[in-house]
Image (cartoon, rainbow, N blue to C red; front, side):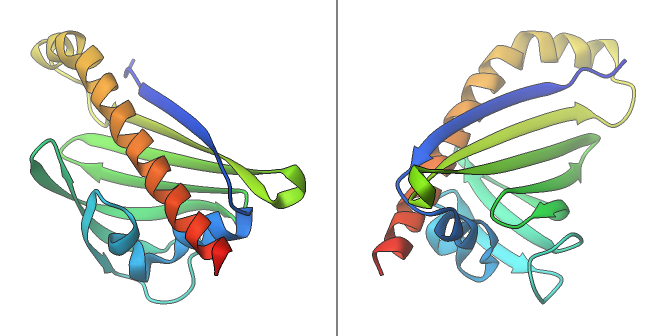
Length: 160
């Protein structure tokens, strides 16, 4: 059985769900709003919906990594889910929004999951056991930075 690695983070955003949703789905300016994204190429022009794809390059831990992202679930202003597959690993990012204070604020959560798409070797399983806790800590730090970036951009939108 394949082991799923999961990290979930959440925070309150002092901006409306509509403003948070705009930050999440306006791919044209994502690289300007999200500090870890250095380049984003939209592969399917049009509205943000199931099937939307883009290639995203992020800088983390001193190196750049590019993934092709696909929207697999979409419920505007409530939830979006993206997936990517790279080098034998599937990544799934679930982002949830819940209105607070009559819609003036938002509870924002990100749940990140990763699992091998094939049967991992004994060496790969050992590496995951040894490196797993460090990877979890680094992933959580990365996701918290993402939450902070989304919050800052959404608050700026609501102030307009």
